[in-house]
Length: 208
Ligand SMILES: Nc1nc2c(ncn2[C@@H]2O[C@H](COP(=O)(O)OP(=O)(O)OP(=O)(O)O)[C@@H](O)[C@H]2O)c(=O)[nH]1
Ligand SMILES: [Mg+2]
Image (cartoon, rainbow, N blue to C red):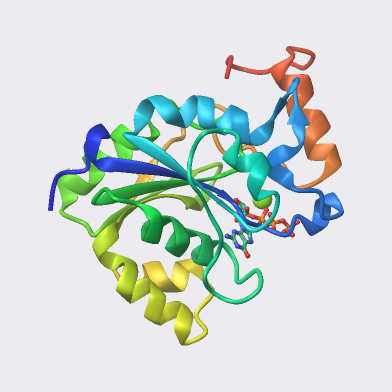
């Protein structure tokens, strides 16, 4: 298997959630600072990978207009982020994918290189980011060879990312130096706070 370097990694933007805390509004399409969140994410992830895939369960045509393949979940109705990760792995043609959620626009510039370096250094199966005091399970580098294993986990009703990671060697990579990297928009209030920050209307310790 090739090493996880930029040209062997597909970026997978996870935009397949229900967004119940946003009253069901498709979260990736919600504008923050004049731009849909999915575009903030694409702008930051694109330079780090060979190509992108968007995982979405609604608004396919709108997501497809970004110019990347759009894939829906293959498991049940809104089975959670693991189903989106499986869809991304299934669509990828590279040995590795890096997943990011559509609702955390401040993707670190070194996400892919640092996750990839951890895989190389440790020989782990996969790598996951930590920051803001916890594991950030949807910011992950996964090898395509784990897709059959993930599909059987999902097929048996598995839904919890941490439980699936516990079955494999997963390196944890700290991004504590990346201010705001994991700011996550789950509610309209989160959206307003992030917009204020991006527009420089609040005190922040570092520019995103
Ligand atoms: N493909 C897929 N992705 C999901 C699913 N549920 C959540 N996600 C993704 O997982 C990430 C974290 O999602 P959450 O914010 O926890 O969930 P959400 O469904 O988007 O929003 P809430 O319903 O308000 O919790 C986001 O990238 C979501 O798009 C799902 O059922 N399928
Ligand atoms: Mg969220």
